[in-house]
Length: 264
Image (cartoon, rainbow, N blue to C red; front, side, top):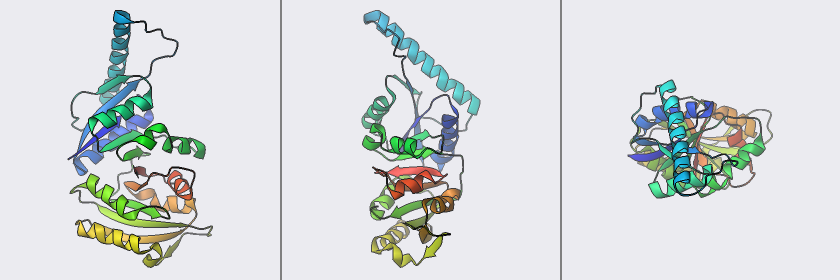
């Protein structure tokens, strides 16, 4: 059983993440823990001693009420491991501290997609994402298809990606498609021979089969980031390595409307 930390705020992105996590948890045998970070207003004066403790307790209660309202509104059929973990402080450092001390196997949060590539780049290269000790599930929508894709390409360690996926998936019976993206300015998406993905790509397919997974296929795609992203739109999620800088891979992930599993 895997242990996942689901970050919730009282907004649309968290509503989608909550419902998606409820789908994912039984499928992948995940024990879900909820966290919420209550960020204090900079203008607030906390004081010291009893005054500060009273102030912090008030923020903790406010955060807990926000999570409970969201849970009541969504009314998801999901068992959570214990009460919500409500913390006070700056968002990224608090989440990172909880991930490191709690020994989590996965971090889940929602994402409201926009057409802003710079915003997406800043998120994926943030201190939290760069230092997270576990894979990150970035929930973009509620699509819950019957298969997942693992996205490979230049500079991506296919074997490591598959190994990370297998550790998370456990005994989940869901089809996996391996995809190797070769980015070219084609008029339309072109499917190449599997050999074009290289020896490591073929070995990744054998690794999945050896682990007892249903391999839907190994596809080598040649096209633009937009064409590749459109091909990936119907998967329950797309797993890939976490790009550290602006790169063609980052543009593919940006153009992929599916939920993303970002692995180190």
